[in-house]
Length: 266
Image 1 (cartoon, one colour):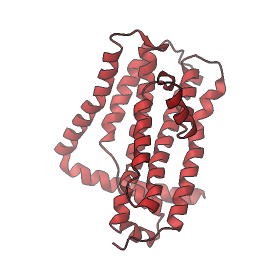
Image 2 (tube, one colour; image 1 turned 45 degrees about the vertical axis):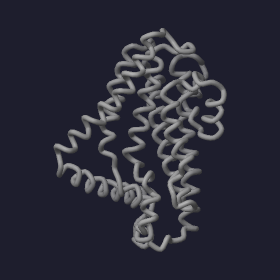
Image 3 (tube, helix red, strand yellow; image 1 turned 90 degrees about the vertical axis):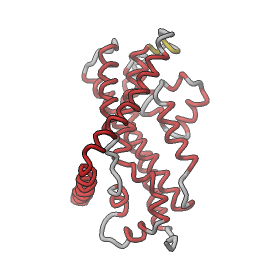
């Protein structure tokens, strides 16, 4: 098992290095893309500051509280897009017949799909998230001991895994619909947008959707309550690891789709 994981990681690194070398052949274009992506990502921070210019808090959450939440979600989504953006174009891979060729190669199909695309431009979004997270940490009143640091790290890790799982779920549905999963696409990006604020800001309806349909509260709402000192339930800090269970369910659906895959004939 360990040997197989090492082989998969080696294969992934090889795919990424090819993409990076190809991208860096046009250095000026890459730099301009990063600047543009950074500016787009930074507008979210500016809009957040604008909202709080007229309020001291929103439902008990201060500017620094929301900024922490915003930064963690932005960083998680940026990491997920770097690693799993190829799942977003999987319907095109099926329609073009490229997936047929992947199946006959002596390599893991899912690793080949992951290796088809690597969003280098998302490095700008990660940089923006680091800047805003640094501001949020400095302005917060949180005691940054080891438990709170680990809670924040688990939120970023869990959020990354959850978004990758949603991308994978969207790709898995392409086995049965061929086309992009519009509703799933909406849920994925809806989770990102709504996740920029603590979920109880929106009311019970959104919170219920993000609990029972998309388990987003596991990586955002509950650990955030512990991080901000709104509860002393320490086990909330462990909730983000539930994202791995969700990833396992999505991967099971993917495997089912692979086993029942029928070529488009392209």
